Image (cartoon, rainbow, N blue to C red):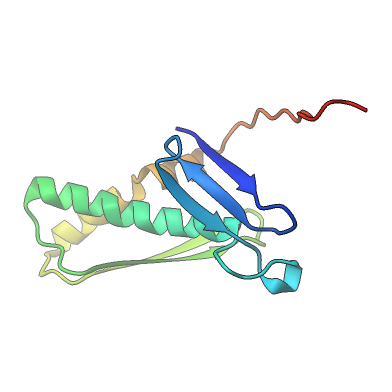
Length: 135
C-alpha cells in the first residue's frame, strides 16, 4: 500500500495520491498555523480513517451474517495531545439488533485494520534526499 504527497509550492496544501494515482485527497492546515483551511489537516484524516474503517468492517461482517444494521454512524474523537493519544469511538446502529448481536459487533469493530495498526504501533524507516543538482 502506498501513498504520496505533493506539497503545493508556497502553501501548506498537499495533493495526496493513493493507489498509484487512482485516487486523490487534499490536505491543508488551518489559517491559525499558516494554511488556507481549504481541506482537512493531515492529522484529521487519522480519526476519519478509523471511523470509516470501523463502519466498513461492521458492514462487511453484517453482510456475511445477513444482519440489517440500519443506519450506521461512527464518530471518533481523537485526543492527539494526550500521551498516549486517545480515541473515543461512538457507534450507532439503526437496525433492530439483539444484545448478542451488539456484543459481537463490538468485537468486530475492535478488529478493524486501522485500529489494529494503531494498537500495534509502527516502525518507521525514513530517508531524506535532495533531488536538485548540488551547487
